[in-house]
Image (cartoon, rainbow, N blue to C red; front, side, top):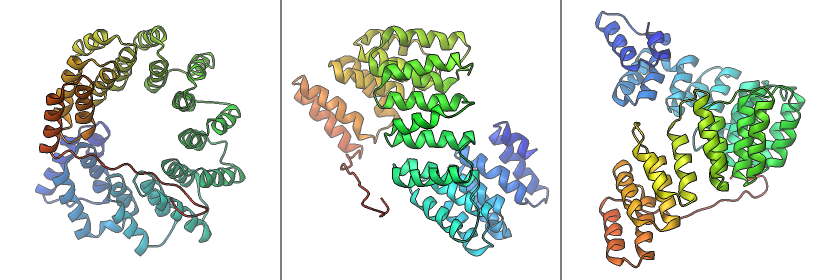
Length: 375
């Protein structure tokens, strides 16, 4: 029942059932922990998660690989690392950590673990490869990514679609759309994720016509569009100022009964805003029945900054200050708009408001990789 509630996103009911279970004298086991931990992570039940974590340690279940996997999904990667350190080392435990670290800021650990398991004579499987390729993409580590790609081919995993889609993500994020295209052209049965990654990749590289042509070719290849497909093409239309095509694709999405998300609306606001159709962008926002997020308001504020529309910029900024009061970027954008309009008093007020709320501008930084050193 707990698993059923968890799978159907009835998080509160799942947690409540665990409590009822304990109230009746039943002791949760590893299966219980495996199902309820991701529920706590997904719903932000921090205190409940801490209670379950403590109970896992008390009953000794922290050494169970399935529980370890659940802890990794909750961000407790250090606990999963402890399991590996004190238990028999096998492919499953390595995969848990490789995937886990690839989702953190410490992605280089995935590369180290992948090398370690190979040195110990273990054979990486498709899960291992997907994790380490994702880590290379996060690190923008093209050299290691190519090495993993070569190993993938030697192990004959290069025909596996999940691995191939991971390679697309790696090469596009590293700016090597040419390599992504070579891999893409050799795939026989491309799925929606394959097409979407390439459309997004070409859009990121500024090759907007190619991105749109791929979107049209996707339909000709009998692959159904999904929500991400329209995010990719609307983003390309936005950056290229292609108002007509953007409106056409937005209407097409609705005709296909794909419900627009916050990201789709943000793309449309950005599209209209970049084209200086500010009132139309504002009317679109006013007509939305959903709770607006920072992506939508941020798109409007960015457009106001480009075209110097202070009134609408103030409106967008007020909502952004409420949603993310400690995000310095929004204050700086509005302050700069006032400064450009020679409205120094308002610019100073925004700067003072930013300071009073503890919002600080982090210094810029960059990194380079030298030789075989870790970035």
